[in-house]
Length: 245
Ligand code: MN
Image (cartoon, rainbow, N blue to C red):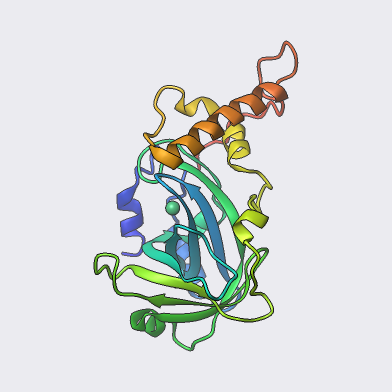
């Protein structure tokens, strides 16, 4: 079944991530135009960027550790991961524990178009050329399967083709914020439940651990700055967003 791997990896009773509705999948699978794509910046065990391309009603997914590059000379490792539900494409928030625990930012979104007739055949062949029309990423790209990384069939390279949208600009540094909320990681954490990790923070070491510790501290600082004098609630006074189910 589509999305089995996705559902098996997570405890969707406790995760804020969408479960994925079969009717949505079927409806999206019938579409041929205006296919959705997104990139989610994900601070989990390591910072990475999840590229997701809608195909067959689900989001084909690759984790790109260094993020996409607009420079055609850069070949960015992209590890293919489990297909995600279409509804995942707008997700932004905090995964408190379990698989993928950390913070997810919707870093880019838009539509994509395959530059080939048959996407399934291109994937099987390990060479998918496509065009992105997002806020940050545009123009022609290719995903090529590569041998290596332990002989895994899941490793690909994401490469920008030379066109009017390529160049030496470091896009992840130039445009680091959410396209959904304009928030950074600390804002996303502060807007959710920043106390979530006071006792049981996901164990992170090295660079990731340092980054996460700083984000948690910064989120707490922004929360207390936003709290009106004498008040106990957050500035927005908003209740925590409810679960979908
Ligand atoms: Mn991820």
